[in-house]
Amino acid sequence: PSALPGRPPVPSGYYGLPIIDVPGIKASAHYCGPRVAPDARPACAGGPPAVCGATLAGSKAEAEAADRIRAVVDSTSRLVGANFPHLEKTPFETQSCMYTSTPDHDFIIGRVPGLRSRVVLAGGGSGHAFKMGPAIGEMAAAAAMGWEPPLPLQPFGIERLLGASMLDEKQAGRR
Image (cartoon, rainbow, N blue to C red; front, side, top):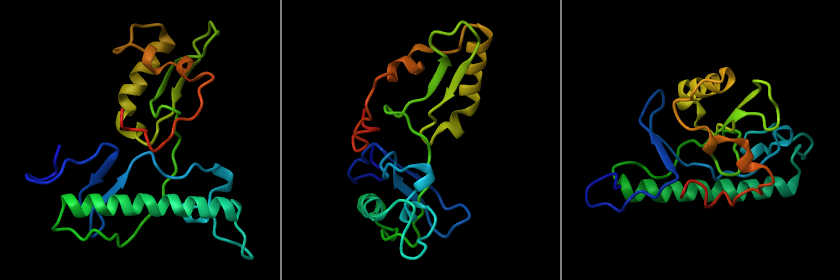
């Protein structure tokens, strides 16, 4: 759907938030930042700053992350410019945030495979679990208690990911 009448449709995989506590909007492409190791996050992606000219991530990871972040910012700027002509398309601030993500960018909710216990996994929030927390909790509780869940658990089972390779995050969110 278009953000404004007569404007091009907004591609999937982007999100935006109105002015709240900052003098502007928050907008970005979802799921498309660089893959990083939490303990060696590039400085350009919110990791610790360089010490003596070196970061924990290393120069190659820093360069790759910087290129990916620049591509996300450029893409989001084009989207804002095309759909919100009354806004400045050049960001006055950028910030990277890190979150867990499953290969298919969906939640994991269900019992641990092969165990007869009530051990339940609930995770893989992929950056949007905060808004789904009550529903995830209800489904995880139903799985743990052996109750009928409000929705089928099968689509969220970890079995779908066992042996899966990472999908191309450029395609994520477009299904």
